[in-house]
Amino acid sequence: MNKSKPSNRSKYNVGRGDCSDRTFDGIVFDSAMEMRYYRDVITPQLASGEITHCERQKSYTLQPAFKHGGKSVQAITYKADFYTVDKYGKERVIDIKGCPDAVALLKRKMFWYLFPSIEYVWIGYCVADGGWTTYENILQGRRERKKLRRLKENKDGRK
Image 1: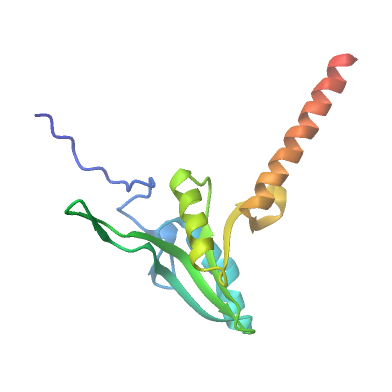
Image 2: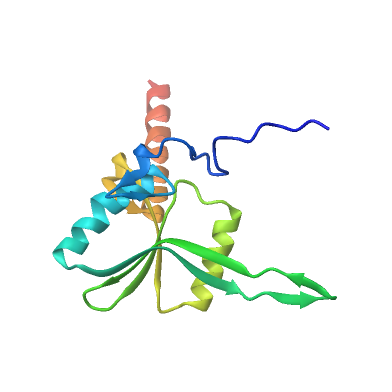
């Protein structure tokens, strides 16, 4: 039997060694992108009073554990990157996303159904779209830039 060496990276390709690129204020984040969001957006809003409460890695049960045919089925859980409450009492769950997979899409639907009063957003960073913005804005910006490139290619091709 061929046993492979344990990887120094997690399933999300985050190194387990030196964490300096994803550490801020003594907190080690799951990713450098999460750390930057906390540093650049959440920390200033906490300081200004815009956000009154922030939790990292808050867990939600999307479906409880149960038994089926005598077998135990594990609960489906979701761990939010950030949970915040603003000065008006509005709750918000923020997930930092590069590219959501099918599981993330499914869990988002379940979250929306179970917790309709909590705003749930995916946030990403894109220089072309002005920095930190919603994942939906990033997708829209990509579509628009792709459309403009196609128009330019068609126009240049006709010359």
